[in-house]
Image (cartoon, rainbow, N blue to C red):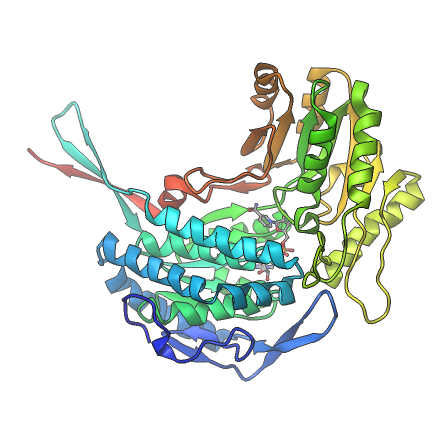
Amino acid sequence: MGSIGPYSDAGGAFNPFKGYFNSIDGTLRPTKETRHGTNPATLETLPEVPVATEKEDQAAVSAGQRAFKSWSQKPWSTRRDAVLSFADAIETHAQGLAELLTMEQGKPTSLATGEVSYTLNWMRGMAKIEFIDEMRTTKQGFKVIIRYVPLGLTVGILPWNYPVAQLCQKMLQAVLTGNTIIIKPSPFTPYCGLKLGELAQRCFPPGVVQVLSGDNLLGPMLTGHPDIKKISFTGSTATGKHIMQNAAKTLKRVTLELGGNDPAIVCKDVDVDVVAPQIASLAFYNSGQVCLAIKRVYVHASIYDSFKSVVVRHVNGLKVGNGREDGVALGPVQNQMQYDKVSGFLSAAEKEGWTVVAGGVSTKQPGTGYFIQPAVIDRPPDDSSIVTEEPFGPIMPLLAWTDKDDVISRANDTPMGLGASVWSKNLDEARSIAEKLEAGSVWLNAHLALDVSVPFGGHKESGIGCEGGIEGLKAFCNIQSLYLSS
Ligand code: NAD
């Protein structure tokens, strides 16, 4: 274990469906206490996973610090080759990992396979980025090298919607730039993370990539540890604020990828039959459990009725069910907490008298999973919770607009600023709206289309910093300006 070289299965048979351990200092370690996840489609109990305590936390921190000393000195090419060998290892076991992903997260097989292949493309694309020091000359005659030096031992904390992609993104940006990393998967979806940790031990030296599974105590333990230099966190805005507070004690660097409430503004010139199904699909992708899903749709009043009827027809045709079954477009929501949250919006619809024009029905029976038919709410008030809050589930409000400045200010009337989109055949008009939207990623006639070369991050309370592109690599570095005397 722990050698750098082309990936092979020499470390022993790898079985995604059995044996879940923390990866600490190049070895797979059980813990005294264990816990388990739940398959959200069947409510079956999944296998036991470790619960890391202070003992494991400290062991991983010590190993990560030790490993940093030599890993940070390795040339870029060595680090890149290790990352590429890890990508090969994932590819070798892609099918098993995708099945495990459906089992723990609930997403349909096609989305799980898509997440694994997206991850591979992302890793291989990032590994190609040329990340070199910059040279400048000062008026006083110094040649200055702007060096990007690694921070040290870092931590990645993950949510439960993209357990494979998010782990690999954080890990790759950390280790390519010479850092070491401890990853903490979400307690709701620890399985793929632990198996990726196991594979990583075959591709990286001990202590470079470690994975710890735990309960709610583990996150604060890691973010409060004085020897950790950076926290890269993806999750809710509320947790992001706690993390920033904890990190402030030792001025840890933070990247926070947080919640969103993305608006889509639809202009009157769109082809309704094409755009309405596209927008509905983007809103309900992964059962709406995407930070960058469309969460509010503002449709020009002149096409509102026809847009609504195409959306309703499309949504009523989406099959909800166990992600392992053929033809399923929406799996269950991932956990009881999320199910209760979305159900809360559906109860509010009844109580507040919002018009539900599609879905909105829970099909949960005793012994079945967290299934919710995708719901469309027709013009709820702008100050209703379904418009102002992020449901992170299969429920979407449709709203009407007539005045351009007014719709821009309604779209921006939120503490969130993750993504947004404008849909129109008139690209100049669409761009003039897009440039006024307060969000980190804004698309014309698309949404959720990410690329490895482009940074991704939130404005306002949707986050701090970014991931992806050269900017994502820089976020794992300190800058050192080295003045050379002539
Ligand atoms: P969450 O904030 O509840 O949990 C995320 C992670 O933080 C989990 O691993 C959890 O164990 C850990 N955690 C919880 N409290 C902690 C603490 N005090 N200190 C340290 N760690 C702690 O979020 P979630 O429910 O898992 O994910 C859903 C949220 O994530 C949504 O709001 C969604 O928009 C957001 N999200 C954002 C992005 C993005 O890139 N911006 C991507 C995916 C999800």
